Structure formats: C-alpha cells, structure tokens
Image (tube, rainbow, N blue to C red; front, side):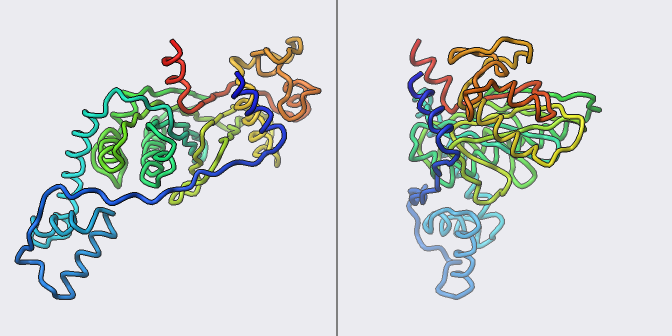
Length: 325
C-alpha cells in the first residue's frame, strides 16, 4: 500500500518517467571446444563470412566459427545450427532454473489500428529486464499476441476483450520471421541470459468505430526496434465509447490510463455513484488522480466520452501475492 501511495504521489506531482535502457549482453560460452577446420583459411572471403554470421545472429566469434566449420561454410545452415544449439542449451537451462522466483520483468504495450495488446514477461532481476535481449523477447511476445488477435475474424458491433494465460501464450506462433512458438523464443532467451523467465500473461482489446482505447505505461521506454511498442513496469488500457472523433482523445486516454495505474480501481462503476474517498474501488467514483478535488467521473463527463472497461497490469503482482500467502 505504501508503494502504491508513493506511485500515486509521483504521478500527481510529475508526469515524467524513468527510463529502462538496454544493457550490453555478455558473450556466451562456446558450446564445444573447437579446432580450425579446412574451410576456415586466412582468405578475406572466409573472414567476411564469419563476420556476416556474427552480425546476423549475435552469437560469439567461437560459436560462429564452430557453426561454419560444422556446416562447411554454408551460411544458412550455420545460422540454423546456431539456433538449434542455442535452443537445446536454453531448454537445459530452463529445466535447471525452473521454480526460481521471477518478480521482475517488463510490461509491453503494442497498438495497431483497432487492436491493442498488453503483455507481461517476468525474469529474476531488474538487471536482466534492462537487457536488450530480454526486451526483444517482450517484443516478440507482443507481436505474437497481436498476430493472434488479428487472426480472429469477426464483425464487431461493440468492443471485444480477451486474456491469455501463461500456457496459452507459450503456444502462440513466434511470428513470420521466427520459427517455432513463443516458448521456443523463451528457451533461447533463458539460454542467453541465464535467468529463469516466464511468459506471464497477455490481454487484448479490439474495438469498432465509435470506441477508443486509451493507454499508459509507467516508467516507459520505447522498443529500440519497434517504434509503437512501449515497455515499462505498469500498464493500463481504458476502453471508451465516443459518438464523434475528438482531437484530444489520445491525451484523454493517456490521463485515464495514468489514473488506472495510480489508483488501481477494481471496477468502472457509474456516474450516478456517490463520490468515494481514498479507499474507493469504483473508477468513476474515485478522486481523480491529477485533480483530487473532483472525481474521475466529474472529469470525464464534460469530455463527451463514456468509460466502459479497463485493464491494468502491474509487473510481478502475482508473484508478490503468492509470496505473501
């Protein structure tokens, strides 16, 4: 409760954010001891092939050299061999690390046209959560969830909201540029970073014309390779119904998302509900986070929109509850 109050004070006092920047990944250990093969001469072409494989895969010099030796200098086969070896190592590490607490991690928010997804991926330490490889895993999970949502062909007359648990999320395809499922990508990340990790959960929302999804991520930083993916420690989606297209919807949606993150409501409630105090759990009856002299309902009503639903993710919240029990 003290941490939540501190977060509310922070959001009220300043709408800034601390950034989580990527840290460099340490070189992985070679899978095998190697010896120079006949293909690897001092020729410029061989060195260029080795550097090209390193740039493309990100694996160590020793492992790339081993891959090219094993595959006779075939670049595509060497790349496939590297991924296979990394995945084997990842599954082995995952089995050894299974059961270790994963209270850190990141929330990922991705929006494309009328679809918005919110995902949570957990790891053991904040250090790893700031690593570029871990952030790329969160990106892959968000993209996999987005592709799943876009594959649901339906005629929307109202908004649609859904959730995916850890098992369902793990079985999703990794995407058009990756082989296998998201659990295979998880194994690769565990092998590279050496920590237990979990694809915790995902939420998705699809809306038709006349609806808008506001969003906010606290402690936000943008993905280095996907401009519309935002990463942070808290995330919220707020589904609004509006009769007309308004210019300020993006800013309004962000403010509503800030309120959901800071005040942690449990339900939307009604504009007819009596104003509540600090302990109020109905969203519209709560004191508005950025102006506690009015309720959120009093702030929203003149804006010409109706709040109909919301989703709130707090990184690691399930782990903390389990530990308390």
